Image 1 (cartoon, rainbow, N blue to C red):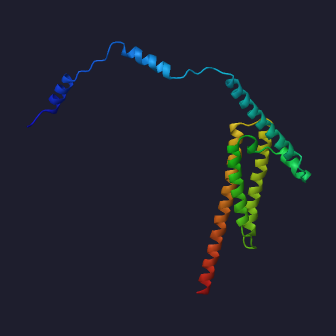
Image 2: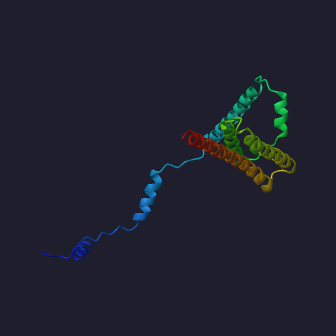
Image 3: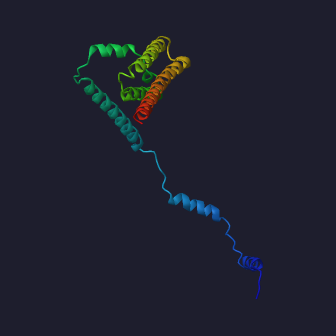
Length: 194
């Protein structure tokens, strides 16, 4: 009852030898050519190209039209701020990625400044940190002028980013100092009350 399957398949293949008739491949290729339609270049090809060009031109004209209408809108602008903005050269003028970096640091600096709680006890400490912050701000403006005059280079861009980082670190250090001062006052109040 036990049979070797390999031998069984081998016998089966030998018994059923099929041969292909002579010229089979040529007949097959001929029928294949007859059944497939031949694509002829027609006048429709140039129509497709013309339609594509027309669409591209109409999109371009649409953008120009909408930009022209957007420019015609009346806006009230403070002249002092526009002159200041024209003279200031920012990261956004160089690349969108640098603009994101600058926006990130400026937003965090402004957020830290907004969180500061000024009291008569902390005024002296805050004033000393604000003086340092003001010096960094003046240096930042100087670097911006240098960037505008000399053009973008790695050293100036790195210095600008480091300036932003230093300002943020300075504000975070001020915040830590204020928290330490607040905690020490709370401990003194607790010690005095006991």
